[in-house]
Length: 80
Image (cartoon, rainbow, N blue to C red; front, side, top):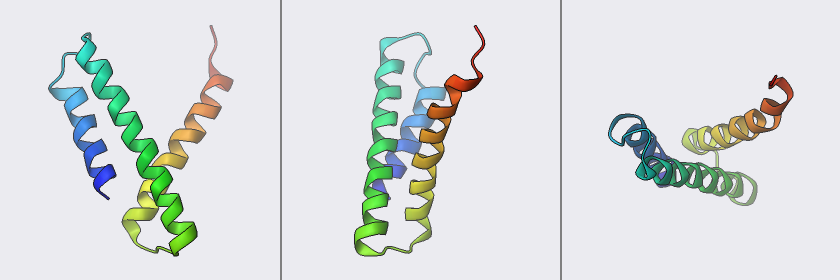
């Protein structure tokens, strides 16, 4: 749950505090993506290995799954 909280804080910071065209915005964005990936992987491990049933763990797994599906399907609908 800590990784999800850090990701939310980084997401809010990326959109509100950091200027959009700076190197800091890129660094905050990459750190946020790393947090999402780490939180999702840890949540899947908790669900599969430990049988975790907490709603927050399922929410973190859903965020990772939705992100992966978005990345995979995004290229199908790009028209240049």
